[in-house]
Image (cartoon, rainbow over all chains, first blue to last red; front, side, top):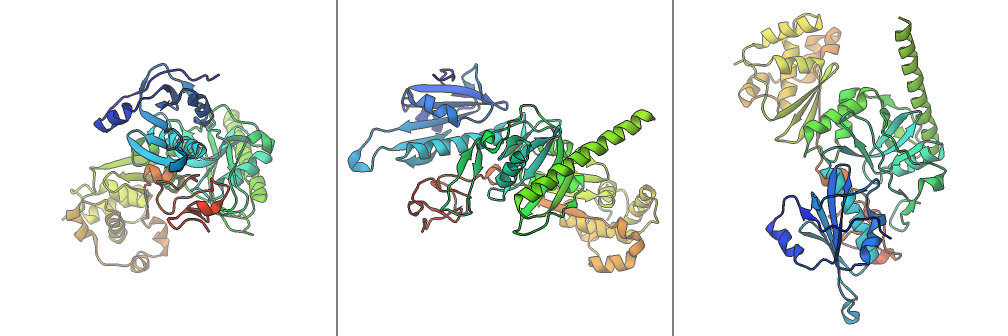
Length: 307
Length: 165
């Protein structure tokens, strides 16, 4: 039984091109909120909506209104054995993003498109492409591009006892705190096309999912080199903001809000940059660095209290 | 002509000892160290290079040095943070090495630094490993969706027109 409300989405700002898609004949639809963005989702087969639910972004909430910021549409055609099976079309707004015969492929792309749409469109959060874990009441951020080793390091931090927040995005609020975005971890084996991503629950790594927003304690700007020893150099706040801006999804869309969130995030954080070797050794050193940071802040607070 | 720093089309954010400047036209972000930031703020078209040098000396507690200001103006011009009319005046054709020699090691801490990055588009920043290369540009990070990599266009983790294998 789906917990999604039955609502036919209507774009806040419609367009002529969208009207053409609207007329295709949608039989089931819903709307949900994610980080302040309202998203509509519709398909032409009534039973399909329940299959879409696991593909929604983590932390989604049922929407009360059908007026949405973004709409995604999934059209599943009838099966034509002589014409390469059925045709499935995926639309993001008025743009067709995929034509395929595989429903699983369409659902995988839909999930990714919705997450990226939320990351770009959310006005309440500044999404940084980064892995995130919690440790000692602080967040550890690992910004980086895809395939830069974020998930490997995040998985190792979770195995070492850190709380899982995300392996893809760090949603920062206006105070610079990180909110959870706990999608399943995309754990890879060896690099390359022949090994597939395995969606992994943090519990499989012995971890738990964080629920509360955390202030940033450590930002890790790491590049992987086999055999390297983690000997990072500290980075100043301004340089840290620039480094993180390079991974900030709405950097061009909302530069002032992005700079504000990033500046606040790094204000109380240590920022370290360097080459890392294998993830287990690096993870242990990162957790130690956060603990040291927390201890020194407590010492400083104690000294202020004495005065 | 007195140097004039750009004021329009920028988002400016202060940090302790640094200044962040986002150029809305070029989508570039710059981090100015304290010396570059003081010169950027002081370049208002009313102050000459010598006036700015005195202003800088007052805020840093060191001796006034016009060479440091010229060097800062050169850095700001490179970052497109000066009005075009002032740029020609700001370029004395002096290399960084020449400037350091003239300024002296004692003043090296005062040397202006401007670091810059190009802000990514939302697609570039959010680029995640896609499970299908359909509709994705070449070079997009990907991981195989199908159990048979030969049918996919994901080659060594990047989308490619050529297809796998």
